[in-house]
Length: 492
Image 1 (cartoon, rainbow, N blue to C red):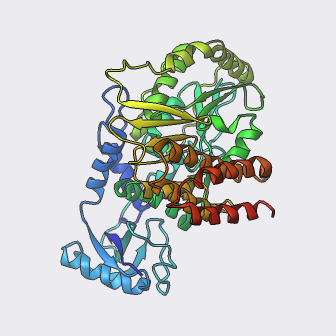
Image 2: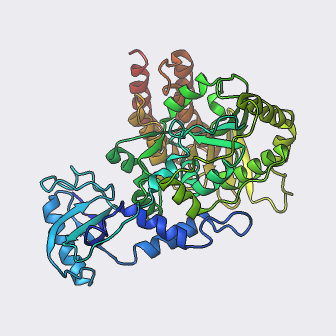
Image 3: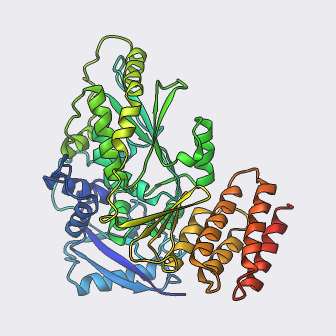
C-alpha cells in the first residue's frame, strides 16, 4: 500500500495542558487574532485567515511518511523519533503516559493498523505526553470549539427567549455542493452574526462517524483547511447525500433543482416559504442576500465577537431581555415584510450582464443545464460537473472523481463513470456532441438517484447516447457494452 503523510503535533505537559480539547487552543488563537471575526469590507478572506491560524497553531509540528499497515504503537514510536529530531519534545519531569490522538480527544488503540484507525493522507495526529504536575492550578473551563459551529446546525440550536420574534431560515445543499459546505465552515462567524436579533439561519447537515466524515472532507478541502477544521472538530458533520437532500427538499415543498438555496419560513410550524436559490460564489451571494433582507427588516446586525461567542459557549447568558408580545406574531410580521419585498430582493441579486468586450465566460445551454466555458478554453480541454451546472474549467480526471462522489450510492455508478470517461476522451465526437452526451449521462445519474427510477425516461436518454456513440468509432464498442449493462440494471 502507498505510504501516507501525517502531520505530527506534540502536546506535552501536565494535566493543565490537557484541559480542554486540542481545538480549544485554536479558539484561544482565534480570539487573539483581532481581525479574525471582523465584519464588513475589511473582513479578511475566509481561506486566508484560516491559513494564518493554521500557521500559528501548526508552527511546532513535523511531518512523517508511514505505511497505512503500520500499527498505532509503531506510529507512536516513529512520531516520537521525528518530534525529538526536530526539538519538539522537551521531555522533562516524570512522564505518566504517552499516547496518540487523532484530534478527537480520544486515544487511538495501539494494536490497530493506521488504516483500521481511519488515518489517511493529510491527517493530523497528536503525540500526547503527560507529565506529573509540579504545581497546583485553579483552572477555568476551556472554550468548546464544537459549540461555535454546532449552534448553526439544524436541531442543535437552543430555542430563542420567549416572546422574541425571529425570521427563520434554512440553508439547503447537498454533498456535491462542496463550495457551499466549505463556506459554512469558513464563515461560521458571519452566519452566527446574521443570526443576530432577528434573523435565525440554520444549516441542514448530519453528524457522521469520524472515519466516514474524514473520507468526504479529505477529498474536498485543501490540506490547510482540512487540518484546521478537523482540530476544531467541525468535520464531524457533513452535507446530506444528494438523493437524501432532495427527499428533504420535497418534504419542505421545494423543487430539488433549486438547491442550493436559502429557505425562509413564515413560522417554525408554518407552510409558507420564500426560496432564494444561491447562484455564484456563496460568500458574495449570501452577503448581498442577507444585506437586502436586513435592509428590508430595518435592523442593525450585531457585530460578531469571537471572544463573546467563546465565553457564551462556556457560560450561557440567561439574562436576555424578553420583548413583550407574541413570538409567533413577530415571526409572521418579519416574514411578511420580506415576502412583500421578495421581487425587489431577487432583482437586486441578479448579476449584471457584462458587455461582450469584457465578458470572460461564454455560456451555453443543453437540456436545461447551464454550461459556462472560460474564454480561451475549448470544450475539449476541461470538464467539471457541479449539481445542475457544468463548469468547463477542470481536468477530466477531476470531473470523474466529482461525478463518483456525487452519485456514489446509485446503481450503475461505476458503469456511468466509465461511460463518461469514454465520452470525454473521444476524438471522433465534436465538442458539442461530447458536451451534450456528458450532460445526458449526468441526467441519467440524477434519474437513478431517487428511490423510484424513471425507467422509460432513463431508457430513452440512454438510447439517445447510444445513437450518438455509434458515430464515434474510437469508443463505440466499449461504450455500447457499458450502455447494455446499464440498461440491464433498469430491469431490476
